[in-house]
Image 1 (cartoon, rainbow, N blue to C red):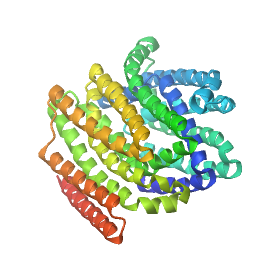
Image 2: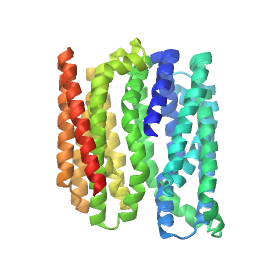
Image 3: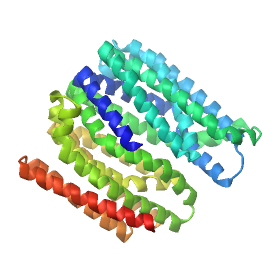
Image 4: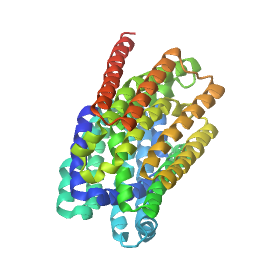
Amino acid sequence: MQVFLILINLVRGKFVAMFLGPEGMGISSLFNATTNTVVKASSLGLNLAIVKEVAAENESGKAFGGLLRIISRLVSLTALIGCAICMLLARYLSEWTFGTGDYAWQFVALGMMVFLTIVYNGKSSVLQGLHEVKRLSKASIVGALTGLFAGVPLYYFFGTKGIVPAMILFAAVNLIFYEWNVRKATKNIIVGEKNRDFKSVSKKFIGLGILLVAGDLFGTAVTYAINVFLRYYGDVDTVGLYQAANSMTNQYAGAVFAAMSLDYFPRLAAVAADNGRMNETVNRQSEIMALVLGPISIAVILSAPILIKLLLTESFYPILELMRWMGLGVLLKGLQFPMGYIAFAKNNKKLFVKLEVIMTNVVTLTFSIIGFYFFGLVGLGYAVVAENILALIVYQIVNRCTYGYSFSSAVKREYGFAVMLTTLCLAVSLTNESWIGYVLMALFFMVSVFHGINRIKLLIRK
């Protein structure tokens, strides 16, 4: 499914690059960054809280239909709040984002997209808590197909004016599909239990959610701030180039993160009380991440020129070096990914805030601003690598001191091997553009793939 999803996104990305160009992609990125910030702020952090509570209830084997009804009401309420914020602050959002009030009506229309997005995110969280991986996978495909067959024609006929209608249509289709799947997955559960007290359950969710919204909101706000900074010190084209590099690099790794998080977080939450089982779960996930992301990162570095030529246009060629640095950054981000969930699974609110809200976001924003200011577009690639190295070190030290978590020998070996091969590939790509350089990079890729396949086969047999 993930391979199919990537292929759809590649085709869609090519058409978007052709019909919108760097400027259009920049406008789209700014719209998305702004609305994502509104969505996160309005959701009150309910999504991860829903996953955690539904997973715990589902594990107990008891009926929890009353809880699901309360979740539905809470999500609808936060969706209305998000819609109202986007519409009432439309002029201000336009001025803050684009430096002009000309896009105010687009933000008014995007209020509907915010409403639909918050509702379908809530339903997605219910499915994730129920461990309905197949249904979630199908939903991803539906969303990608919507973007391709509905969004691309809008870009073709209306150019940048088709961006907002495409965003609204995407959210509407996703909501319809998630609603249908939630009804199928929960029909027996809902019958099995009476209503619970709305006030007490809501207080519990919002109490946990307020903590989570800080991390989510800071993350999306940082993305928004980076985009606005790039527009201010560069231009809309710069935002588009950065977004293109981000999209091209992260969609492959993002597929891995999405696939693994659907299964990993519910499993980790279920064993969080037992440090021994928790260590085993985190190390197993860490090893898999290194084995899967190593070849992907090398492939991005190796094929960056081809990807830009085939999937974008020549006007995007300035992102070549940026993409290659981001390739290494993706691997480093993946290596810290399993540790990032530990504090939340352990319900350690203070530690979660310190790591996810303060450290991660402040470092990302600071490094990105410094990187672009001093080194231009490629400086954003330097920033991605530097911030993820720092985060990896901090996560390891903090989780070791707090919970006794430590890398197994297998994780250390796989981390070291993946980072070594990817770093060598990056060094060759930056110093040797001849056919010899590409032969060496191809060799690194084949070694990484061969090693990953063999090691995963051994893990499956255990």
